[in-house]
Length: 384
Image 1 (cartoon, rainbow, N blue to C red):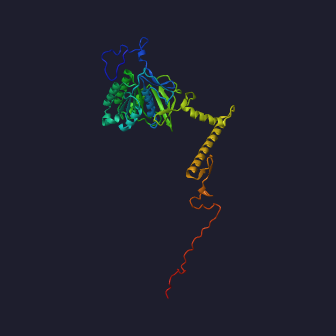
Image 2 (image 1 turned 90 degrees about the vertical axis):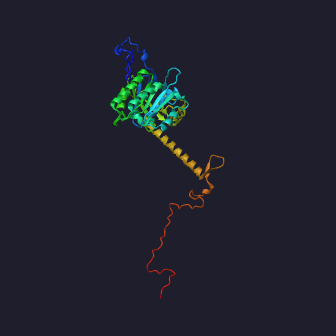
Image 3 (image 1 turned 180 degrees about the horizontal axis):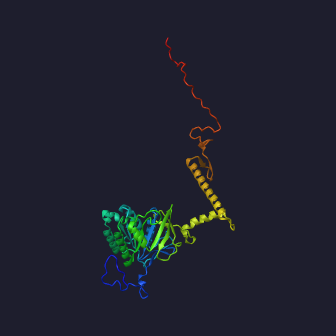
């Protein structure tokens, strides 16, 4: 059975001969392979297209970078629930197309992604280098097709669709969509696209291209960022998946990469034992063994304990600051503090500066008398 191209004409076969699929059709060779899973659910698969959407402030770029890093390195330790399956021992390759940032910004990103790896695993395409030539949408589509054929990547990432072909017409959008279908059908490349504001009240800025790719994607995820945590939920999938198991939460670490937020106790690793021990100590101080407690009472006790810990931290900070300023000093070798000798009886007496009067002492103020017009100025000679 043949799969015909959209962007080229196949003259050597009859397209209508095997148009109908039945039980005799050999479909095993077309079965896609799962590349990336989260909590057992498929995120990226060969011959498939995954779409990420959300507000402009969501961390869709970092989520895509996490998936690309996992494919390039073969694993991703910062997310225990993420699993990568590649063909044998061959490393995965990624072709990343940046449609927005300058080449100077992309240079830092390239070094960050390619640190300690072989150079051929990551190929980068910065459209800003093309300048005004990037607005020739037909040439841009052909250039992307040639880049995919040359690199033959495991994953093609476009960040983002909003600025790839801004304000393009429906014909240019359909031509690029057909190019994507040829890439998916005739190579082992998986596609990951980022487009914003496809949900909610805000209008999408992806135009005709985003509308076409968003509705034809095999799997769609919505990202929401609140404060430091980003939540990823399954929005739509052609495959049968469980929305609850597809929930993923992450924060951005010091390495500018996503770190999974552990919300399942069974997923705790040795890196989380310190926090787990501290939590057990706090809970053990407010609940005795064998004691039962209501949720409201547990909340009150936890809140009281938290306020007490905050007061202790503030008190320690005051003591440390007083010792640093020389107001108090250690007494001998013992872990005891005493008032500094030069401080005197009042903390406000220092270096010969007198202390302010006590609040209960009433110090009156005497104003000078007003000058009088009848008074004679002193030492003035009166004319006779």
